[in-house]
Amino acid sequence: MSSLQFHNDLDRLTDVLPDKVRRYITYEKMDDVIEIVLDIGRTPEIRHAGGKIEYLGNDFVVEDDINYITSRIQEFTSDNRSGIPGTLHRISAIRNRQGKIIGLTCRIGRVVTGTIACIKDICLMNKSILFLGRPGVGKTTKLREISRLVADELAKRVVIVDTSNEIAGDGDTPHPAIGHARRMQVTQPEFQKDIMIEAVENHTPEVIVVDEIGTEAEAQAARTIAERGVMLIATAHGNSLENLIKNPTLSDLVGGIQSVTLGDDEAKRRASQKTVLEREKQPTFDVVIEILDRNTLAVYKDTAEAVDYILRGWPIRPEIRKVDKTYETPQELKEEPTIADIPKEINKLEQKLEHNTDSLKFSFSREKYVEDMKKGFKKIYLYAVSRTIVEKVIERLDLNAEITRSIEDADIVIAHKNFIKGGAKVLSVANDYRLQIFYVKTNSMAQIQKVLKEALDIVETSETLCGYYDDAERALDEAKAAINKILAGEKDVELTPQNQHIRKLQHELVEQHNMMSKSIGEGNNRHLKIVGGKDFHN
Image (cartoon, rainbow, N blue to C red; front, side, top):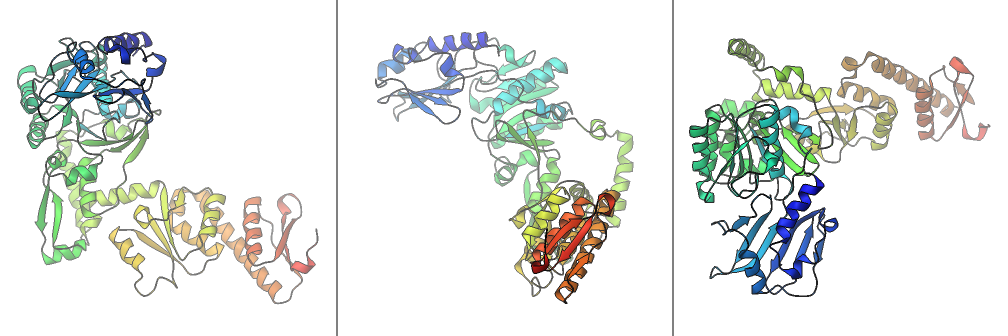
């Protein structure tokens, strides 16, 4: 929204406010304001996005102030909401037990652009998308911008079911922020489900946009729309996908949950109890996006797979996206399989399942997840292994990994073989999370490097790095042998020439044994000389 448009809209709001509030409002002060609050018997408040609250003057709000505002706006609906025609501002009422209005919340509505650039590729995939997030985090703003994107740039028939007039503003003419999308108003919130169905039956939309799906009937209406092949963009109550799964009213949006009793053999294969929770049907929404804050989104591109993983207790991490970045859709995701391809895909899946009869944890989707994790960033949980040495190896060799203190957050576990015997609890937890465990025999640099190479699949991903690992291991073994010679009585030992990075690792190993070393020689002949502490001279 342009600065001029925002000022014009703000003028429309200040026109309905009493003078004791209006005189404190300036355009400069309103840039980050979320709402203006007026409660009888209290001073008026301005609430800013960062949590700051500003009190306006010393005069209390009185009944006449409330009446002044309500006489200048439209009547409140059954959900105690009203608005100002032609703007995105919303005014909500608080009533006492007799129904008398004793407080007002004036929500400042503004058009914010650029908030969906980071998920534009997902919006173009013609898949139904569900947004989750706490109030005030920007769900409605994203719905408004997506409506304009799909209607204007993709030229699709978009219908917005605007229950509270928050997406397209109050009045008969929708706000220009929604582009060429059409808007259907809802007389009472309880009729939202009916208008959703009516939109499909009467207006042949390709896309339907709904804000705040909150009842079982609305969830069922959403499923009906999706089953008719209409793309659905919506928000729902709940902060995360896991919360939504546990919500009996809305869990149908992500496939519904049912309790299943397994046979003895199946329970054993799954390493689970006999009674487990499973997804009941195909989710209404293909993609779920959690809005963590105004600048960060967590994207689950395959809702069905994500729900299955959460119910089985497998580690599943969404793709984190930042609002100020753009992302491209991989080419293979842009092309949907045709009907002719489906038998081939089913055949491939059956072949994979035939080769993975051990357990459902190695099913096709699980295998794909593990392979994807191998290619990406790894979090390592250490058990009785030197954190200092592991950090040095990761830093010196620039590995795509980091150490985590929480095993629940880990991708792999590295444990000391001598300390994990006897059924340590970490074994049980790692098994529950389906984590691979790699063992070191000693806390030496060479041993830890060797295990890290195995754990991170260095051999498969980089021949150069693999060669470097091998060279480093040989060089550190040579340094260790030289250290033993010094301990046995030799005055000094010179090692074979190495590059700068490997010499640094050798220096660190020598230092750990309370000895001293220095680099001597020039160019390709530069190498370490290890000496006893009392014989070391620069």
